[in-house]
Amino acid sequence: MDQSTFFARSAWLRRGQRLAPTLALALCGSFSAHAINTIVDQDAAKPLQCLTMSEPPPVYPEQDLSLQRGGNFRVKLSFADADRAPEVEILSRNGSDDLAYEVRRYLRGYRLPCLASGQKIEAVQEFAFSPKGGQPVHWNDMRYVAPPANASLVSCLRTPAEVPQWREENPLASNIKKPTSGNVLLHIRFIKPDAAPEVTIAYSSSSQAMARLAQDHAREYRLPCLPAEAQPVTIEQMFSFRGSSRSYDYTLKDNSLMAFLGSVKDIDKQKVSFDLNTMACPFKVMWAVGQPAFKNRVGEVGEPNLNRVEFLAWLEGLTLNLRREVFDQVLTQSIIIDVPCGTIDLSR
Image (cartoon, rainbow, N blue to C red):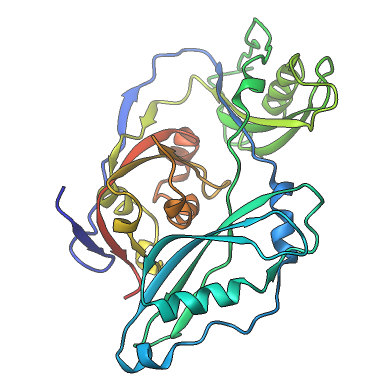
């Protein structure tokens, strides 16, 4: 694939694939449960918030600065002891030995004093040296690297055999005051293998009656293979209600990164720069609609690569330019995005 450079304010920014409407044939209300996702325990990332740094910030080496030599470094940090510096692995390097030394020197002063005994945590961080304009030495916050979800536990999930019965009280009546369609995103937390889970509403665009129906359904779930002394396991699931008054269904289609970004709201206001060539390009990502209700769900297709952590985190926060009624229909829909080699420069 030819390498390409994308500029946010240039001609590459074009409209993405139009949503494809299909006529809805249902004459009565319908209820559906979407795929189940395991939620990563965000408490595991909390030790990163107590980071201390005892070394002075990186400085631009005189020789590199005088020769106008820039540099970019992406590092993996592995913390295993509250009183020790992390193990540092350079994932991507573009710069002199002096620049690399400054990065390593600074990282030697990192500590996580609130890291529990026996706990291990990994993160990715990027450093940039730029001799022209702006901040000459810049680095972002550490990005937590979540461990792989334990899919084997969720494989034993037991759910009710019957789907809840839902009927519209009056499908021909005005739905201005009472929604006849909507989504309910539930967080379902299992503490014991033989007990009902804790069920909370993370997002809802439905009526209270619809939300209660989804909650009651989820409380019948069981996770019999959860070990007695294991940490709680939380999953999330979307429940969708569709009324007979809805005329169209909308579906997102797989697309290229270029076309996808052309469909993003306020893309011209983004201020980021990514070198995709350092990310084992080309590659594909699975992207599911969440924003602005909650973070988009983003995952790699195929072998994961830590060089993509910051790029994937950026994709989590993007919002498609959609009307409200369309957004509610495509919420949690997934598409495959083809990511080429090249660079994304939205900082101009």
